Image 1: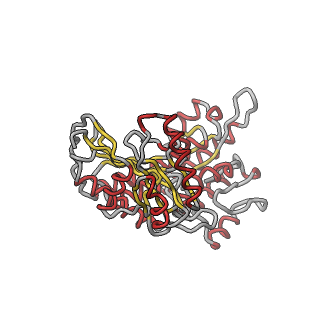
Image 2: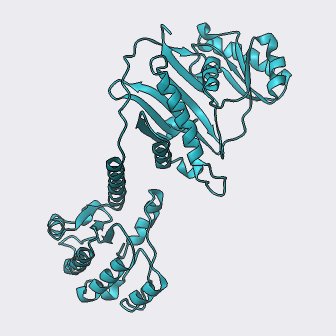
Length: 395
C-alpha cells in the first residue's frame, strides 16, 4: 500500500484480517536508494512529498516495491482536490499513471482509493478504469471489498476442488412443542454431548440433589412454558448452601407465578455451577422453510442480540466448514486467545459441533430445532449450559 495517508488504513485492516507483507532487509536497502532521505521504508509506504507527482521518480518506487513482496493487491491512497480549490490534480494523476503502469507490469490487481467517497471525481474514476485500475471511494469500503473478493476467490476454489454433498431435504413443519430443559439435556447426553452435572427433582429432594452434584449450584424451574427462564425469574445461579437454596425456591415460585401462573411448576433442575468459559457461543440447528436443514453459529449468552454476530451453514456440513465459520465470527478473537487469555482448540470445538449436526441429521423427522445458548467453550471441550429442543406435537 502506498500513499501519504495510508497509515489510516492500518487500523481497520487488522480488524478484518488483512495483512501487509513486510520488506526484507535487502529490499529495504534497494528502496531506500529510490526514496528521499526523510522517507521510511515500510508497508504501507509513504514515499513523501519531495518526489510526489514526479512520475519519473515514483514509478521506480512503485515497481520495486510491488516486485519485492508477495502481495495479492496493490493499493495507492489518493485524495483528489476539487477543481475550484487548487491545480494540483496533475500531480495526483502523474502518480496514478505511474502506479497503474507498475502494477500492470507485475500482473497485480491495482486499486486507487480515496479516504472519503467525495475525494475522487468522476473523470478520474473513468480514467483509472481505462488504465485497468479499480477506483475505490472510502478506506473502509475499499478494504472490505478486498477482503470479500479474497473470500469469494477462496470459496470458489474450494467449491471447484471439492465435490459438494447433496443438501438435506426440507421436512414439512407442522405444530411444534418445546421439550423441557431436562429432557433436552438428556437427549444431548444420549448423543455424547457435554452438559453440566445435574439432577431433576421435586422441592423436598432439592437439598439432597444439591449435595450430590456439589455446591455451588444453579437452580432452574422446569416447565414447557418456560422457554425464556431469565425473564420469568426461573433461574438462579451460584447458590452456595441449602439455606439460600430454599430461599431461592420460594422466590422463584413467586416470580414465575407473577410472570405466567400456568408456567409455575414443582419440578426443578439442580446443576453444578460451571467454571467461567473462554467464550460463549450460540448453536442453532433448524429447518429453514426454503433451504432445508441449517446450522447457525454465533456469539452466545447475553451477546446474541447485542453483537448480531452469526454465521450460517447448510447441512450437511463438515468440521472444516465449521472451523471457517467460527473464524469468521467476531468472537474468534476470544477463541484464539485474547489479551493473554488461553486459546481454544478450535478444531476440537468444531468436531463437537459437527457431532451435534450428525445427531440432528439422523433425527431430522423427529427433531425440528436444537438451540444451545450459551454453549460454554473451554480450551479443549464444550458444555451446553442451556438447551432447547423442539419436536412435532405428535412426537
